[in-house]
Image (tube, rainbow, N blue to C red; front, side, top):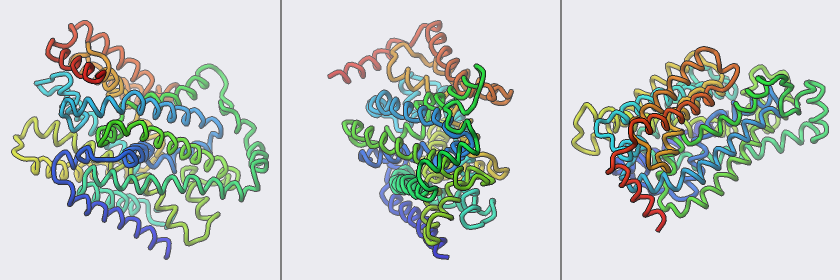
Length: 484
């Protein structure tokens, strides 16, 4: 009973954050990017906790449980992609979006490429909404698994509770609520991912015992190739992990955090904070899966190994805290997904067809959009599935559609709107076809999607003559200001 009380107290804390930030969110900028008021700690931890999602405590431990050291490629991809995002994308995106007076990523694309007809805006909005619904459904699946494993709730009851809580505080406080709640939740995740591996190592009897145990179960457990043989299986394993890293510049829910920091000079500090957080938590999650395999090899669902360890290795009254850590991982991402998707609809689709007369009207539309998108995500999650697999599909879709566009829009003066549109369409079509034709069994769909998206962007921009003079000069003026 005490565990349930602790867990409920945590959920009420999130709702309280929602009410407090509701009182602070006075403008559309406040609701969408926290009025560019976040400090370095909130920016760093909010960006990474919204990035990692429930797969950090469910999917990654489950993968390490099943494949052992083969999971190292995913960790390499995550660390490399995170570092690239902070060093190459973060500062420039923060300053250029202020320069173009853009409060969403899509606003930035539209103004950067001078798209007066709104084609980029409409296409981008649709892509974000579709893949964010898929992303949200993956996390809602995680909440159902969590509450089933921790408290014995029916799977459907679990997904209703998880979605209900995140809906309340996201609806109320917008990005302010998402940022502050992610700071709390990211801290909780960090503590859990440091503590559980240490206690698990103690219970398994030390490192030597763990290694001997695992080698008896699987002689290939400590091979980085997980026993894969032949060119394609090895290539697929390595590129699948590295491909995750390639996808970082195309994730709107992460990029929004870069746009929200108050002082761009603090991004260097945020980078250090983010890399420490990501490094320790990803390795902690993998170690949980590895040691969980040594301690409880018969676990039916590897994605629940964190909860299995929490139940069996810690005092009964602490389960509520560890369940809250998993829910923190889930809700920190769902809230970001919902808000980015709702902002895309409100500011980039709704306004194309309905005249908006005030910021309050736009905020109301965005709040209603949060509810509708939540319901659609819920419907997708009812059939269940693997958190890791569903999340990777959505990650690849966003990466192929937006990754090349983000990078080239920040650095290449010759990008035009035709190249941007072609890049998004080719990226989306490639991801959908590759995945649904079963080609993902050979190589992660993000790799061909991202590659073809870049080629389309370059070729189409070139053959259509590049940007008009006004568009190019405005961007070059931004670059000139950056050098001063």
